Length: 128
Image (cartoon, rainbow, N blue to C red; front, side, top):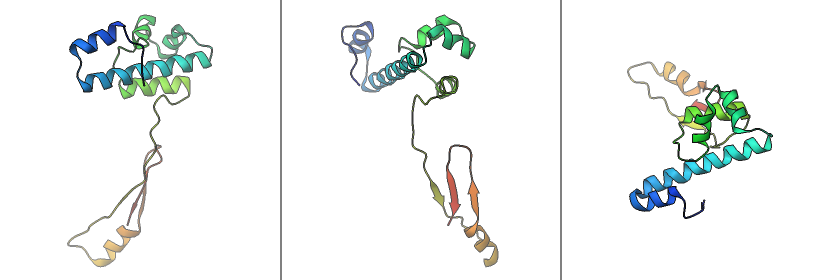
């Protein structure tokens, strides 16, 4: 994602940034932009988001500049109150084989046919 040049973030990155920091800043700006878009779609202002999250408006303002590094916990809270994903990651199915040693063959077969359901992230785990 390209962001406007000639701003204080761009100037700072040119002097101090590494590829990793540049990537981090780009992601933070993209998250802030997405939050702005979601607020606009819902007819909300940053002060409304502050109220919904029980935060000070000044903290939300800092977040929305794109200079704040978001934690996944903060992103998840924002997603919950705005009822939409900011970051979307495809759920993955994970399969694993259970190895049982020093047990009877019958017990091993029970493990192989068992099915384990995980949390609400839709990750189905099956022993095969």
